[in-house]
Each structure stands twice: as structure tokens, then as C-alpha cells.
Image (tube, rainbow, N blue to C red; front, side):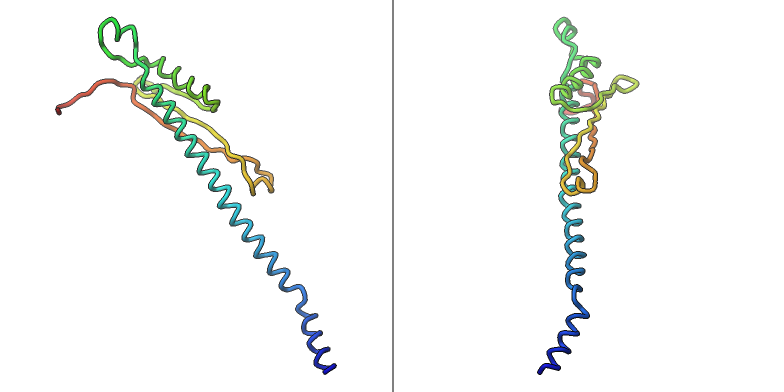
Length: 149
């Protein structure tokens, strides 16, 4: 019995710690996977938020008309510079970094927004935030053309 116990003890001694190494590798792998899921989701949410804010700023810009012409003549004409100012005002009111640019011909307006999201797991390796950008554009024209009812 004593010999059997020593033989068993020798076998255990040879493999001592092997489960610990395996467990460390598995736990690290699971943490990396969880980090990708959590911080990847934060990046997706930041991108969706940036796109939504850019779209709302562009929508706000698209509603600006030249009021003096509309009152005097009844013609509805888009105020291009007013539209750009309205979009920039929307971004400022929501405390978002972004840019508003009128197209070369003045018929388009593009809004670009940059937002950031804090990280959870990537912060452990020195990446505290993830940056996301959103973009929306509109055509600054008014009227309906073509046939139809």
C-alpha cells in the first residue's frame, strides 16, 4: 500500500501545475473575447450615434428657407448659408465635434461628425477611448418636378 501511494504521489508531482497553466490560458482567451464583444459594441454604438446626429443636423439644415423671398413672392427657396449655419448650430447645441460643408455648386450640404466612446477592456492596455465618425448629406433643392398626381 505504501509503495502504491508513493508511485501515485510521484505521478501527481510530475503533472503538478498543468491544470493551472491551462486555466490561465483559457481565462485570458475568454477575457480577450469578452473585450472584443464589449468594446466592439461600444464602437458600433458610437458610430450609430454619430450617424444619427449627422442626419439630424442635415435634416435641420434642409428646413431652412429664404424667408424674405418666401414672404415677398411666395417662392420657397433654400437659404444655403442659413442651412449651413443651422447644421453647425445643431452640432454646437448638442456639444458634438463636426464639420458642415456646402458642395461646390451649392446644391448639396455634407455633415461629418466625430464622436468617441469609452472602452472597458481596451483601457487595460492603454486605449481609453474609441473614435467613430458619422456622415450625412442632403440636396438643398426645393420643388417637385416630373409628371404625377
